[in-house]
Length: 362
Image 1 (cartoon, rainbow, N blue to C red):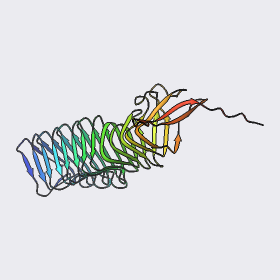
Image 2: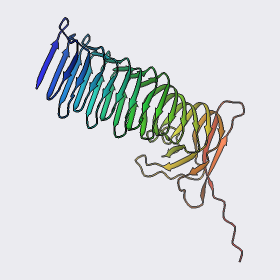
Image 3: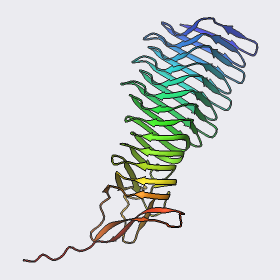
Image 4: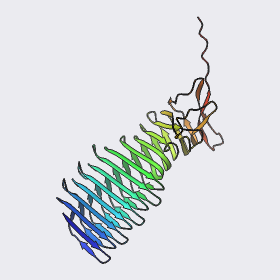
């Protein structure tokens, strides 16, 4: 086991080659109170059964790498960037090899992790990235769950917390991946956000900026997506049971699914709403289920109406309707309300009296 501490402004440790923290055992590196470390590469928990932890804490504390950083090579790696600390490198991987585990935490205002190239969260192992309380991460591109069998999870939580990608962000490229954005957190993608078949993105008061969002996985939650969403073979579910998801545009193809939950008659607070600031091109499946807000499973009544989708313009209709079962004598009526003055088009569900079946003639 080995521990190194670089403490206070003016204290530094320079390495011209690789810096291993936990090469074949347990290693710990602490950079505090303005201390500085430099190296060619950083490798944390590099071999199987090894463990490496680096903590960069405090304003002015830094770890500068001229090449890549791997947090969890074949073992377990942990990188903590807190209270204004800073780490920079070219590309990086959290959980580089299979069966490895890596965790990076960027917490606190001024804390930052700068990746000038690709950031892989779960390249071939299980990787976790946590950004909170004003921490920031930047990368040229981001990938969560890069290879088959890998798992990548990223959480961006809190006002001023952000992950900025200057190219694409892929959630579930070939592995399993989850991206959570909450409480004012921001994910900014210059090009496209791609959600793979085993990828999931959930917003809970967060924001996504992107050129477009292509979903063949799962996109859920309440928040804002400043981009057009293309729901191809994927599932979109507004709300965190319930809530409103606001998107710049929405296109759902024949294999796409829109899930809506109804727990009452108040839009956004008791039932889900998809709000589209641009055009909605509809197709595929609409699923509507009742939801329990804590007072029992909701049961819609005659005359109840639900404006489940709002858009500047609506083109097309859903191809398949899978709607919650109503009480005896009731039926659903799905209306596409088009405002020809161009303000707001609405997809509205209403509960109406069922048309009685004609009496059989014998």
